[in-house]
Image (cartoon, rainbow, N blue to C red; front, side, top):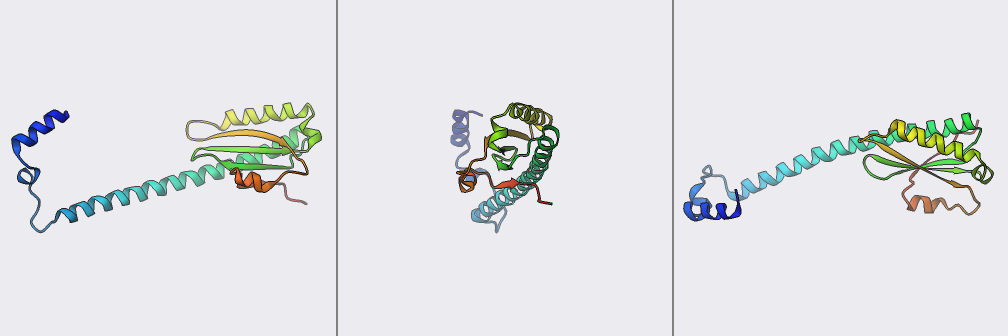
Length: 160
């Protein structure tokens, strides 16, 4: 229905209250309040589902991060200092691998990039994706800056 058709209908049939009836004892405010409560309830269900999806994806990203860390450590003989995780959206997560400077400037880093790339393509789809970055460990690394940039989580191997 076009706007012009809607205007002709209102002109032809008169005011809305004349054409449409409501049950006796039900006020316009009650109808509006029921409508708004339905929107709130619907939004609450959507928010609950989104929260569930986010935490499922976060857990998945954390598991992938541990696997990535261990894969690089075991197969390439490079021990990352830490791996940081940043949720970028409901479905997108960023990893930041911090390497010792000697490993970071060595040819081993190219092999680590290849591992990161393979894992990214293995696990990413339209409902979940990861991105990987790396940087060298320096004495000036400010973790508070990483947190400010959204890297709220990190994994480091437990000391044995």
